[in-house]
Length: 187
Image 1 (tube, one colour):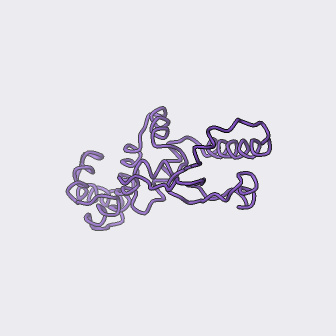
Image 2 (cartoon, rainbow, N blue to C red; image 1 turned 90 degrees about the vertical axis):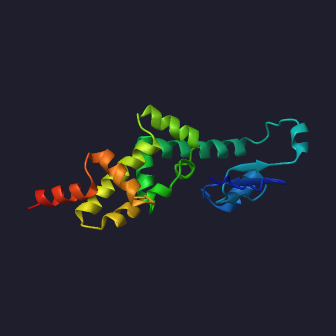
Image 3 (cartoon, rainbow, N blue to C red; image 1 turned 90 degrees about the horizontal axis):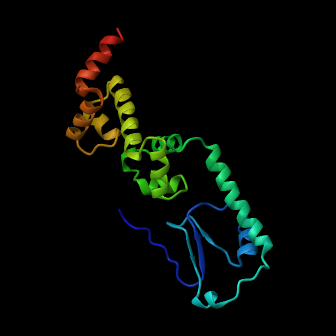
C-alpha cells in the first residue's frame, strides 16, 4: 500500500474532505486558505510558532472549530452502526475487493485503527464484511447465469481458482453446483 504524500511544508493546512462552507469562511477563521481534497490531513507551521505564548483571543475560531467537530460527530452518529456504514461504502465501490482498509477508513472519515476497533466492538471486521458482500453478489450473479469466470472478476477475485475456494468455503458447494441447485429450485 502506498503511503499518502502530504506536502506539509511551509505554512499550510490540508484537509482530505471537501469544504463544509465557503472558502472565505475558512480564510477568515484560519488566516489562510486551506487546501481540500488532499491525501491526508496536515497542518504545518514554522518552528517559531512554538515559541509564541498561547492567547485566548480567538473565541470565534474556537466556536467555528467546535461547530465543525460537533457536526462531524452528529453526522457519524446518525449514519448508524459502523458495520452498516462500512458495508454501504464497500457496496458502492465498483470492485469492492480493491477497497483497502485505509481507503475505507478515509471514506468513513476515520482512521484505519479506529475503524477496525469499532467494527471489532460490533463483532465484525472489514474482511468479514467484504466476504459477506462478495458471497451475496456471487450468488446473485450466478443465479443470473453469468459465466463463473466473470462472476469471479465482478466480485473482486483476480483468479477464478481463488473464487472457487472462497465460494466452497462460503456455501459448501462449487459455483456450478450452486447454480444448478438454484436453477432447479426456480422451476
